[in-house]
Length: 226
Image (tube, rainbow, N blue to C red; front, side):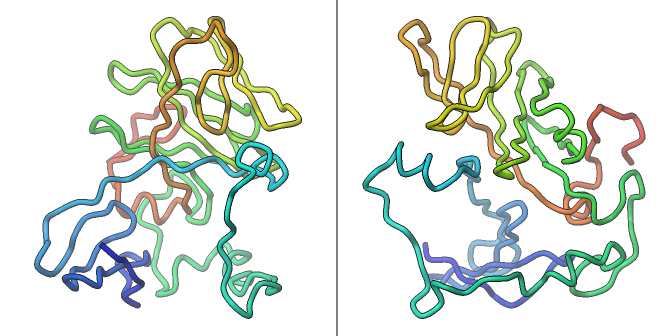
């Protein structure tokens, strides 16, 4: 399946289409909105946290680099004015629907095991790493202020505490029963057996996340969700 940008918006979020069937897909949750595959849902994959090129090249020396021909040297942000305007909620102006957070507050959103929860970047920046609970599963949420990298890991039952440290070849997670790569979640020493599975998440403005997940909680867990 080959996806492209349809040019349409839903709740000020991009709508994709697939070239094979012409079905329209909401990029926020991967749901097929219109077309032959309506009702189907794409499976979201966990993204690798943002890291510096030097660290990535050390891990994957044979990496290829994606570029757009003729625009390799292009710089700047054409949406800088929009990002800098706290009252501009979306391309199509809209009023805030949930005022628990400012509309343009950046959040890390997780939809997992039937629970949606938002973690304001400002709170994650203060802590660097937080551990939270989704039903029977404990997760760790990491925020790297320098690299703007975020990641969510599923924690094994025997890992009760976790912190992360920066190394020359990237960040590592240090727990009471081992160490792991903060980029891949794979063990980095011989005594560590299990990997930390990466859980999909989304970084978004608050108004975008709550538009698709109106019953979301906000970390620390609140009781004010609609």
